[in-house]
Length: 401
Image (cartoon, rainbow, N blue to C red; front, side, top):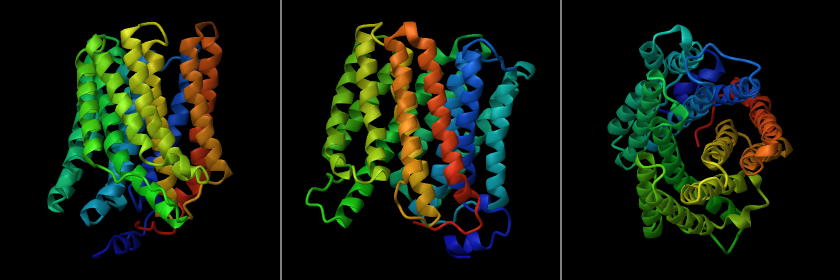
């Protein structure tokens, strides 16, 4: 078995275990919808989980470290074999990794009845094992250029550990350094990996259409400067979230990444939403940075929670949905085109983000806007599971692209 295709053909079990994106993308989408179904009545005080986390902390944790943790696992288990030329993890080892993720969700949900250390160990098992697997593959394949991705994964896991520590001490972990660390790592992942794939996919699509205007090549000097400024801004924000210097750095980083995005010719991709949505997802990175920076400088305009949702629901939510749809189509041999159903789930996700941010602007209507945001969010991810679930579980082997 010297090729990815041979590795997958040798697997005779469930098709969903034939490649990393299959169980993790489907699981992530289902959990995003289910967790929101639980959160809406929790927010209204009509329902409570047996979790030791406060309701807001549970909500923040399960989206950032629960949902996004699954998407990261599915993405890396699919991308790293392409990066390194080594075989993917399939079959029962893949099932074992997915089971660790499920164990984490159960442990956090029932954490009121479990020792905090046991909950943390259960929840951190997947990122710890995943980091070991990715490190082995990168080192064995001598794929040194992707070591920063491993570093960001480690920082993401460290944020999760700090979140558990803060929750165990009785603090509001949703406002702590653990969440900021995990969120900063996630935004850097989008900036680094998105900075490769968005202009690359855009260029491929525009070349096929014989366009004269192509995106600037990725990772030129300007890109590296913009990434360094964003990294500095995020590190300062993690350490000093209310300091004016953090706000100023975030605004500067946001402005630079708006320029970076403009260099990728996204306005020429409107005929194909599967490409356009990548630009829209990335747009929330600078929008979140600028808005959060302004909120730090002049508190009360939107509220920190609403500003952070431009990153958490906007940048992370829309970019991951964009990546999951594109990767599922590409790796199951489908045409790289967004049909009406796919466009609908993109629109629903954007509506969820705008409704959540609007709740910070008009607090008198916050209850209705929160409910609208939750319903739109559920529609986006339940819609993904409905449209793409059949592709993720079908028996045809995934195509390596």
